[in-house]
Each structure stands twice: as C-alpha cells, then as structure tokens.
Image (cartoon, rainbow, N blue to C red; front, side):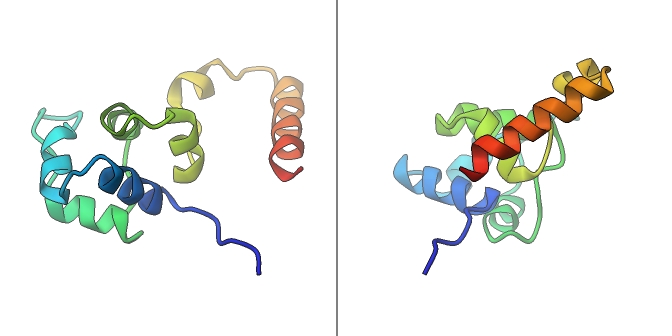
Length: 108
C-alpha cells in the first residue's frame, strides 16, 4: 500500500516533536506578521490536525526557521507559491515550462 502524502500539519507536528517542543512552546516561538504577537496554541493545534492552514508566507517561513525545516518543502505542503516568486513570475511560457519540469521531477 503506498504511503499517504504528508500534509503541512503532519510535517509541523513531526518536526515539533523531533525538537522536543510542546504545542504551547512552539506557538510562543511563531510570531504573527500583523501586530507581532505569537500564534495561539489552539491555532497551532488546528494546523497540526489539518483544520487550518497557515495564512501567510511569513508564518510558513517562521515554521521553517524555528523547526529547522526547508521552507520550500513547507510551501509545497501548504499549497502555496511564495509571494516573492509569484511577483517575479511574468513570462507565461517560462511559468508553464517551469511548472511542467517541477511536475516531472516530483512524479518520477
């Protein structure tokens, strides 16, 4: 039986546990982009159980940094293209070719 794909929440939970952090401890380390306070442990719990997704690139980058995880991997699991890349993506043909290459590489 093939392995189930990993979700963003599963990856965060696995990395958090590997670092020996509680949800409360990790939540305190993830700073919201607006207003600066930390995310709530309940919000983190919802993310880990795939009831919510991170709402911004900033949060995904925070998770990557705190958990020592590759941010590109987390962006893919979150189903997002980082804003900085999307803003530079102007050439339709280059986007189509790049995405096709990405798909080929991932599905090998």
